[in-house]
Amino acid sequence: MNATKAPGGIKPKHQRLVLLVIALVALIGAGLLAAYALSNQASYFYVPNDLVKNPPEQGRAIRLGGMVQKGSLKTRADGITIDFVVGDGKARVPVRYTGITPDLFVEGSGVVAEGRMEGQTFVADNLLAKHDENYVPRQMGDMTKAQAEAVVAETK
Image (cartoon, rainbow, N blue to C red):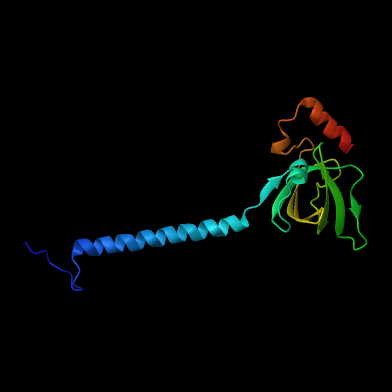
């Protein structure tokens, strides 16, 4: 029994198999490329205590969440660069941000800063302020009431 061959000399069954393998390799390649691109864009979330205990490598994009400490907000001479301290009740991290701050960004409020560590200072590229004064980052949500009150008292 002779199977008919396609014009290229390959049996249709083998031709479909070759096309399937090529499509599968292309799909896997696209998936790996997408995963690589996303891994470079991912930013991890840290609270100050985690950042102090296990700092990321210098220059890696991360998010820092916590409370802006009372009395820590200072504006530099250029008028658009601010320095402040973010705390979580266990540790504090100095932050520098250049740009226009959100309207709701004030001392004692919750903030998520996106940026990177440079030395001992977190340099923020973007600030996200929560509209509710009772905001607590998810990682701090498992605190006891006494711990939460201590953090709030510390920011006043």
